[in-house]
Length: 149
View: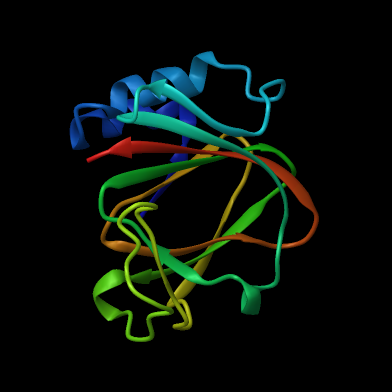
């Protein structure tokens, strides 16, 4: 899990050959006017889910993991969004099997910690990270940029 300012995104380009393009698209796109839903930015190698969502209580947010994609999550509108986080290797309570079509599996474990994302920041979640997004109060607009590993 990485939490940092978008202005520092170049520090992470070397982690994956597609990250430089993904961060360039994040910086050059007006996300406030884009229709909610999934939009391909570079085919299925880099795509984005634009979401307008109500945040939820900690108890209602389930940890999730992905295999094929790295998540870059950015708060576009709203004051903050919290995330639960746990090391994937420590997750013990699956809620079903891994869905390879959707690249996701949920868990009912208690997160090891919580952290908060604010405008101008991003969190990058790798396959080793269990994460429970969209925790807090209120309504937000966010993007989840999916980058193929």
